[in-house]
Image 1 (cartoon, helix red, strand yellow):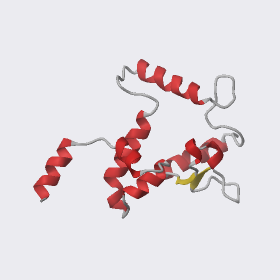
Image 2 (spheres, one colour):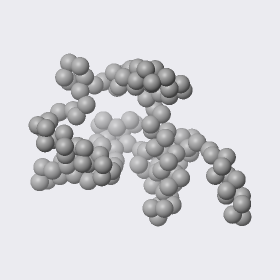
Image 3 (tube, helix red, strand yellow):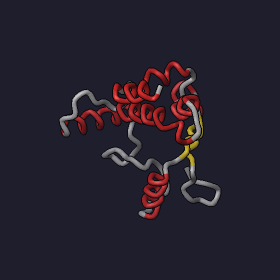
Amino acid sequence: MLDPSGEVGSTIELQDKIAKKRSGRSIPLHADLREALSAVRQLGVNQGPVIRSQQGGAMTPLSIVVWFHRAFKTLDLKGCSSHSGRRTFITRAARLVHKAGGSLRDVQLLAGHRSIQTTQGYIDGDTDAQRALISLI
């Protein structure tokens, strides 16, 4: 995440070796996340994982799933999972991509999907949007 000057860069370079199905990609950082990561660095966290387990090491994929499960249960959020944020991101990105001059292909690339059909499976429908769309025709 660091650029050549050692500052938090504008992208995360997800390497093939750690990406699901070896689908590495470059993911632009939201300005708020970039600012937060810079603040963490100023606290002296310059190496290793940003989010750490209770033992101080990297969290495993399973420990992240368990963390989300407990958080959602504590908040009494039913039907949520560790994957909910991904589904929400893809749905929101699909609805907004036209404002950025992009297409569903851009959402597919950000998600790291090999198939546009996989991306489409993540996108929730919206009956209000469907009504509004019909009224425009």
